[in-house]
Length: 113
Length: 111
Image (cartoon, rainbow over all chains, first blue to last red; front, side, top):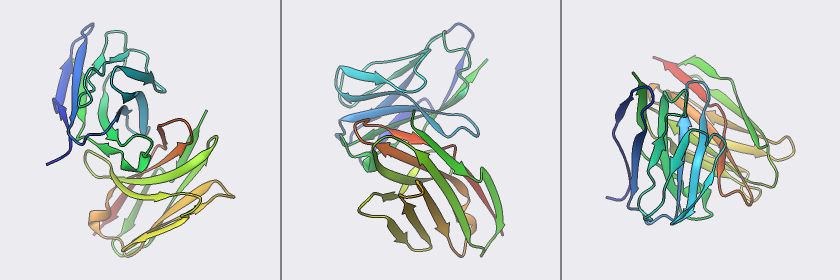
């Protein structure tokens, strides 16, 4: 079955700790995206990548970092610089230049202890 | 800066009612407008509207794009409890390779 997997489903972060959210796809999509969803705020773009070893900042990149070493994988690190990380994080992938093909993973809920 | 606004933020109706959800946008080089349904986790794609495809219909759901008014509506007729979800509108602008999402409308259908 083709799709996107995100892990873990729930993640707890302590103050000052960096945490990494995993996103893997086997759809052979070139483009991958990370969104953050807060209640009443819709989806906001954190980072996106159109090709391996290249990525661009979205609208709210501060306090986050990403890497794209493999086409299938686009992990997101929430650093200690992100002061309000509690949110629902969604990863997506798409065929390059075909936004309507954007397919979402099941999400990771990050909570701060 | 690209902007997408949805209204209302939330809506509660009885089963069988018809609802209309709104989405307006301000973007440079509009390319397409997309509607998604989000029930618990991942948003699922409903429709894509472009300059060459301004009206789409699937069962009880339909959507229209008004390029003059820079807006779109999503209609759901004969609503069912399974229609309860957050409905997201997103706009793709040419050259950006990314979507800008609205805040979403939370729709609740009461049996």
